Image 1: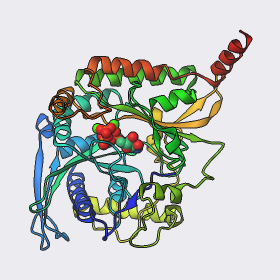
Image 2: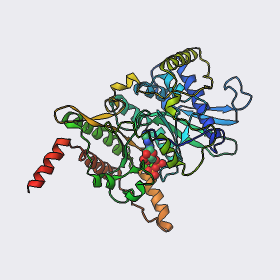
Image 3: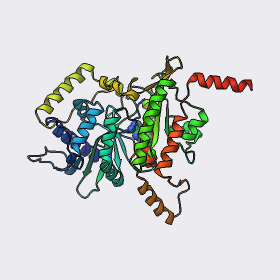
Image 4: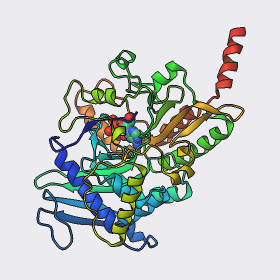
Length: 432
Ligand code: ATP
Ligand code: CA
Ligand code: CA
């Protein structure tokens, strides 16, 4: 599958922003990685560094195509976080290094955030509001401590926090995080679950137009879906959920959801929806730039990938900024070996269904808790402002973080049942 958006190339309106984002990331990440590793200090959490890029370059920054300012937040903390999430530094840079790197998923949510995928679909750049940015900086110590104690957290993995600004432009804050969905597998169904039913329905009739749409709580219930985890996986999942939700409650965060992607092994990748998906986000529109090939067919060989990774490692050691990659970056056909140690990403990047007897099931779940940078106080203020105007019709009053978390926990943990349980229940009800 791959959530394919619109490719951001030179003709795209957001090309300059995207280019600046990546140039900044590339420079700051290789700058930090070039240094000898060390323990974090308290000051690392509040650190921020500002860089000016221009066409000529100076002794600090290399020359760039455009004039812009780039701010890098807590670079050492994120370096350590990336290591905890078992990312290979060279691999991270490489994913964010190819020339036309990104595809843009417009703004799928109501929040107005933009999403960009790295060329290999492993990473997502999400633009965030200033309030979300401030929140992440404020909770960074607790987030870090949580990751240390919970390497298998389901909460979004944050790899970097940055800001770009072009002359006379506005400040754009953004995070780099994990794409929960794998680059190499079709996702047959996607759900965004909050545990609420109000307004949580994607119109079923619209599914025809948009077969890859993200469905919601009511669509899940209507389908009578279940996580077929089996007892062992279920308890792992629920245990981790409890810890993650407890953190979010403590930090007074709400409005997050469980993103679920389901890959059906029986259907496999046959549908090859890549090209179709493109039209979903780009209705009727022609793509600019080079013709769209199936990204898979452009996959450089493993060997080539290894060669490039080695080159990058050498560059990092020599403390040079990483050059712009002229070729396309790889489309991995499997997940990084090291990441298989992360429980919920261990079955080909996801968490595989299991039967009661422990045999593997037919589905792989790709899941995680997303959109977790909304502070209760902020939502309440926003609602307050809205009330003065005519209230939007699907407005839901925000519920405080404690009950929000409880409801979320209750709903999600209630969704897990094995296939056998479901069958037994069906038989029992037939006999009635
Ligand atoms: P809103 O605040 O209106 O809910 P938002 O702009 O904050 O929207 P999110 O809720 O973070 O956006 O995400 C919107 C959609 O983008 C999700 O439903 C999902 O389809 C996709 N998405 C977000 N984060 C990820 C991720 N880490 N991996 C894969 N897909 C993601
Ligand atoms: Ca959301
Ligand atoms: Ca949001």
